[in-house]
Length: 73
View 1 (cartoon, helix red, strand yellow):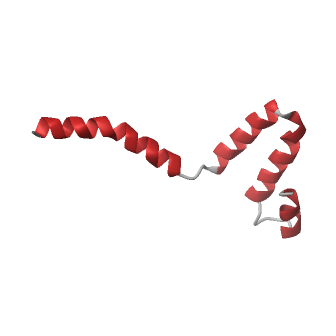
View 2 (cartoon, helix red, strand yellow):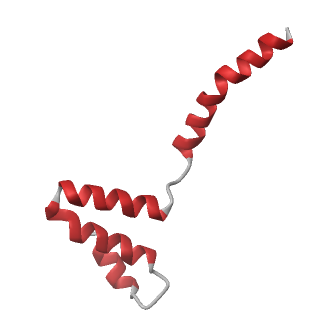
C-alpha cells in the first residue's frame, strides 16, 4: 500500500511541476531574451519591442509615464 502511494506521488510530481511552471509569471530577463529571439525572426519589430521592454523595466527611473505609455502603441 505504501509502495503504491509512493509510486503515485513519483508519477504525478512532474505533472505538478509543469502546472506550477505554467502559472508562474515570467521573469523580466526571460522576457528580454524572448524579445531578442522574436526580434531576430521579425526584424521589423525588433527595436520597438526591445525599447518597450526596456522602458517598462526602467519605469521608475528618469522615463516619463507618457513616454512609457506611448511605447505600448
